Length: 518
Image (tube, rainbow, N blue to C red; front, top):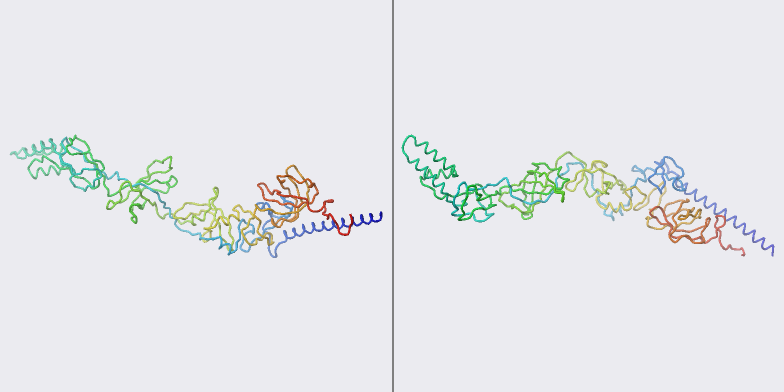
């Protein structure tokens, strides 16, 4: 009986020793294999720099151990087309590029159309106004223009009036002209002047002289063509001197009061040519110029009024109509320009996705200028002839972060000379096995083996404990199998359990060993 126990103990010791040697050889071989893969340079290539894949923004000028993780730094090599293999870009296959609907445009140089459009209302031209007043007291006996906005022509009769003062002045003039003698010329001139002072026009005075008869009733005519904007005369009205009878607005030219955004005022100058279209007159263009920019900004709409003077042949543009006004034309020096849809506004930066040879796409920060006709000026960041993406930028950006992370869209990516599969999205879980090194209040430190789905080699790192806590059978030195997922501040453990092996001095050992009795 004692001999059997001795044999059992001896066999147990042998198995433990072999397991320890095998596990140690496995761990050493795995670490050396990953380290060799990570630092072995491809034939004929020299690393540009080294970095930790977990912290890609930090670069080092020589190899060594990462200050962030328990792993070796990974070299980054130049690509065939130039640039670093990990420069924040993404390489996609032609098939994926076609599926995404990627379209590109060329960066060109030319005059940027600085024009823009605004909406305004048609109004009377207040500089084309004629006011007809009563020059003397009298009576309106007959009215020809009877309603406001009636159209009138220059010279058209507006009203027939009786002015007693005009009758007395005419009779005095005719009496002086009929007198005989050498000193009657002065009397005639004085009588003519009194007719002028009574308010008679030169035409009316000439009518009295030519006919030799008193004109008891005089006709008032329109001084210009247009419409009657205000009507102050009515038949039977007693006129007072200076009373307004008619106000006539011309329609040969009109104003358009356009509301211009405050940030566009710097592009406008009085005299700039404009073209207007009215919804009521489709297909008709009305040309004019900026007459004035009114010195006031509406605090609610943040717009200012630009007064546009338009020629109105035929009087087709009527006050109150809506009109769309296009300001400006191509002017200024040649500039680099791209389609406006190629520019991604992030809030703090302006970014375009640069298309390079071999299906590679790279985000580039640019400085933009003015816009016009669907084009945007590029002041810095691009060169003439380059290709930029004008569609599917956000589909590319969803896999290749504009901040330069290691997420890739499709295909195989070279990192440190090793062909690797695309990184698993951060929201996915990743399985690993390892040994518990330390257990804290809210964290656990584990020395784990390689994690292929994250492209990690063996390392020791800390994780946040799962919400339910650790199982009771997990202690320091326990071999565990666990799943992790990307969290807000690193990777969190979502499930953890002791491996189906017992822990003995940090080595795995089967619970039941063939050929050994319990």
